[in-house]
Image (tube, rainbow, N blue to C red; front, side):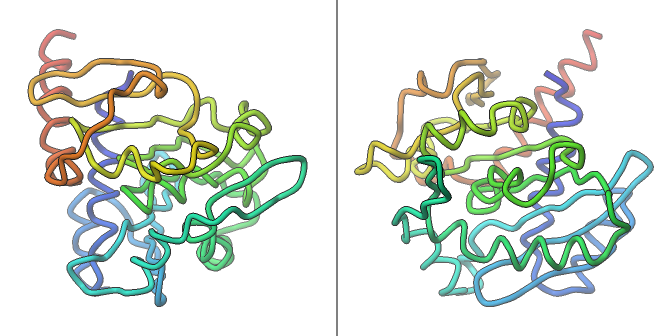
Length: 237
């Protein structure tokens, strides 16, 4: 795994939470990016940025501390949306994605390749990227601590488009196993990066042991643990 790239994506996912546009611009410029724009509505937020390596859509997670009720309602609405051929996704996270993508596509030239990342609700939505982009326009995908957002048929249909999706779980995060009561919802089958208090392990998403620790659902903690891993990897390279 490219830990430097994963860390960079996590830092963008963290910066995507900033609500004030001027502060958002400053946060992305501090990461060495050109800030293209800021999308915000009642239940969604995202930032479009670029650097020498490409264009990035960074989707915010739940803006809980800002009291954004729409975000919270999206989190709890796990009713299925049927997309045909047996494919289903969760309604709350799916709703709003079309508006994000319509805005993002309007900011850049047609055919632009998008690298997409997000934490929590943002990672949930990043997993839906193949619903809004053709395969040729999908770059790197990173989902940090996403809940389970689709059924097996979805991941089978978009297996090639999601082959590069990096799924990152942290510790015993309470929300990584959400929703718990409906067995149709799963994570992308295949390997995931599981961050530990010291170090990490690479496991299949189905092998994650579960957890109920609210404090592990924290993008700042994810960034901190990834920074330590990336630093150790660079020192031994």
